[in-house]
Amino acid sequence: MPGYKKDIYSKIEALTGLKLFNSKKMTGSEKKSYRNFFKNEAGSLPGDEKLNLWYFKFIPKPVKEISRKITRYFRLSSRLLVLVSFIVGISAAGVLFYYDGSAPINVLPILAIFVILPLTLLFLSLIFSFPTTSGILSPFLQWIEGRIEALIPAYQSQNNPALNEQLNEYELVYNEPVQILFRNTLQKASAAYALGALIWMIFNVTTTDLAFSWSSTLELEGENIHNITTVMSAPWSWFLPAATVDLETVEATRFFRAGSSDIESASSGRWWSFIFMSIVVYSLFPRFLVYFYYRSRFKKILAASLVESEAGHNLLSLSGESLLIETTDKPNTGEYPEPDQTTASTETNEVIVLLWYLSELHEETVADKLNRKILSVHQISGLSPVKDDRKIAQQIAKKSAAGDHADIIVFVKFWESPNIRLERILKEIADLNKKSIIKILPLVEKQSQQNTANKRNWGSRMASLNKELGKKRIYVESERSMEIKALA
Image 1 (cartoon, one colour):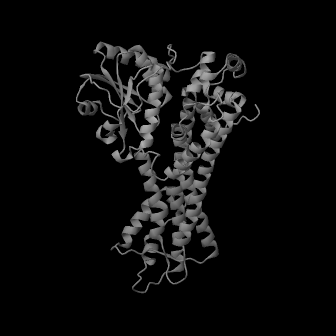
Image 2: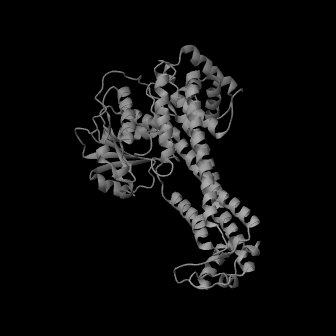
Image 3: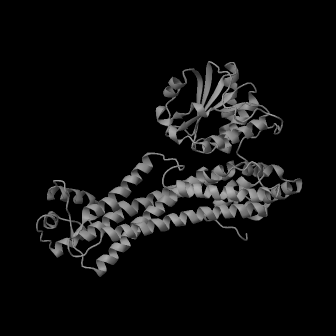
C-alpha cells in the first residue's frame, strides 16, 4: 500500500492519528467502507496491523498532517538526544585522555566516568521506575508538549469533524508507548556516549604516544587495584589476555605527583586495551541488551494501545473484532456537576479496591491505609487479558451492590495518563451499578511530583466520562494522594 511503512515511528504516527481521530463522527458510508476494508482487504491480519493499514489508507488529511508533525517532533527529539550524547562522550574523552607529556593519564577517572557511572545509572533505571515527567527526558517531552499545544488550536479552529474535540496534548506525549520509545532512545543515547569515547580513544591511541598510570589520594595498594581489574576483565580474559592488567603492570604504573615516578611506556600501554574492553563490556554491551528488551516490549504495548484506543475499538467493532468491552448506553450529553468537584460528599464503611497496573502493592497495607472494611481487591495489569475486563467489571459492580452500594476505590499511578481501557471498565461498572460511587486515589513517587498537569489530565478525562454517564459518578481525589512506597 502506498505510504505504508512498518518502522517504529510510522506506528507511533498511526497511534497518534487514532488518538486525534474523532471516531464518533463517522458517517454511514464511511462505516460501510471501513467494514469492507477490514473484512476483505485487511484479511486475517492482527488487529493492530489492520489499524495501521487503515490509518495510511483512510485517515482524514487534517488528522494525518497533525500526527505526522507530532511524530516528527518525537523523531527530532530522539535524534537530538543521541547526537548530544555522542558529542558529550567525545568531549569527555577529550578531557580525560588529554596528554601533554608532563604527567601520565590517570585511568581511575576514566573508569569512573565511562564504566562505573553508566553502569550505575543503568542499574538504578532498571530497579526504580522513574516517571518521564522528570529527569533527563523532561525537557524534550515538555518541548514536544508545548509544540503540540501551539499546533492543535489552528486545526481545531477549522471545525473539522474528523478531529477529536476533547484532544489532550498530555495524553499524546505521556502515553505508555511514547514513554517506552524514549526509554529506548535513552539506551541509544548512552550507547552513543560510550561510542564517542571509544572513537576518541582509538584516534588518540593511534596518533599519540600516550602514557597511562593510576593515582589516588586514598591509601590504595597496588594489589587492591589489581584485584579490581582482575574481576573487571574476567568476561574477556579467557579469549583476550592482552587486554588484562597484571600486578606487575599495576605496580609499575603507579604515579606519585609529589615524588618522581618512572612510568615504563611498555607496561603503561597495556592499560588502554583494558580500558577499551571495559567500556565495551560494561558501558556499551549492556545498553544494547536493554535496548532490545525495550524494543520487544514496545512492540507489544504499541499493538495493545492501538487496539485499546477509543478509535481503534470503534473501528474494529465494525467487523466485530474489538476485544474491549462494549456498552449499550448511548453517551448522555446532558448537564453534569462541574469537573472541579473532587470529593464525594459521603463515604461507605465498606469498599472495593481496584489496583490499576499496581501488582507490586500489598493488599494488607492498602487495607491499613484506607482504614475501612475491604470487600474485595482486584488487580489489573499488562498481564491481564483485555477480554476479561467485562467479567471484572461485572464482579465489582455485583460486589458493590451486595455491599449496600459500597464505594469503589481505584488506585492509579498519577504520573501516567488515564488509559482508555480503564475508562471503559469504570464506565461499565457505573452502568451496571448506577448507585455506586467511584473514587480515583492517586499514587505518586513523591508528593512534590503531583503537579497541575496531572490534576488537569485526570480531571478532564474523568469529567468527560461523567458527561457520558450523565451524572457525577467518578471523583478524582487528588488531595488524598499517597506515596506509592507507603503501600508497597
